[in-house]
Amino acid sequence: MARKSLFGRLANALKEEETAEDIDKDVEAAVMATMAEKVGSLDGSVVLHPGTGELGKTVYIFDLAPVYKMIGGDQSRSAAGLLEICERRFEAYREHNLDMARVKGDHYIMRFAKVSNEAGYRRAVLIINEIGTQLLSDRFNKLEVPEILVAADVKDITNADGEVQTEQIGDVQKKGGVPIDPRKLGDLPGWAKFVVTKNARTAWEFSQRKKKKNDVFEMVEIKHTKASKHDDIKMVEIENKKKRDPDWFSKAMKAD
Image (cartoon, rainbow, N blue to C red; front, side):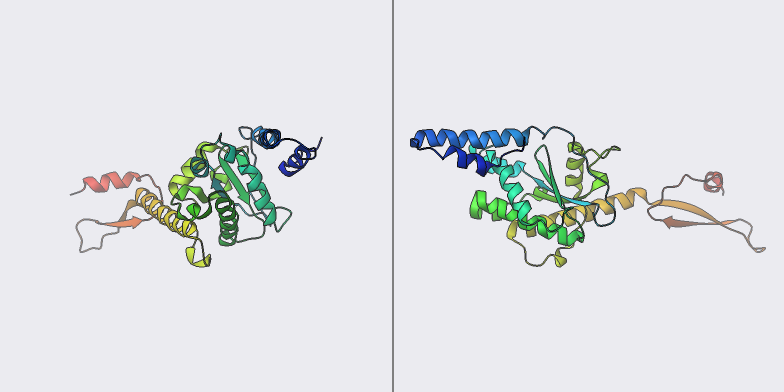
């Protein structure tokens, strides 16, 4: 049987003449019934294709937890309709039949076809901004939480079977996700400017730490000339390349 939307349930709830108290109960029941259907799959498996051709490999993750916190928790009456709002806003910005959105725990994962990373990110910003301002008005624009939106490579948030892993999402958030160039996004609301700039900086800093960790020094043996009594040893830095020291490396280090 096809699922009824929240608005369909509300229409049925208000068809007959009832007292204000009865209407409140019916509306709340309609909202909770819709939410129950949505929540039923939140802890289940969400599988994402790695992405080829028109369907890019980048997804945009909207962390719902900060919003839940600002509206009284994920069990509040305001929270009950949050996913319904997300669904409606996403549909309003859908441009391709491959565009999709999935929910995993407190994460609303969006994916767009035939767009650059920056274009997809900007669309995600527009969707989230409408959701946030609808629920929180001007308060949302003052939010400074970098985890609220992060771009991620599908392979970085899924296991070998393509199933989304909440722990991996958290790891991506800590590293800033896929770097997005703020200069290519145009005008943004205040919260989004903070988020994209902060995450871009975090991603850059992480890449530098990773680069430093992976940098190794390889001893390069320079063949001696007739005038030389000993081989010259020169240190050459090889960036971003893991190598085990060859046998002659240890010998060279012990040479006089």
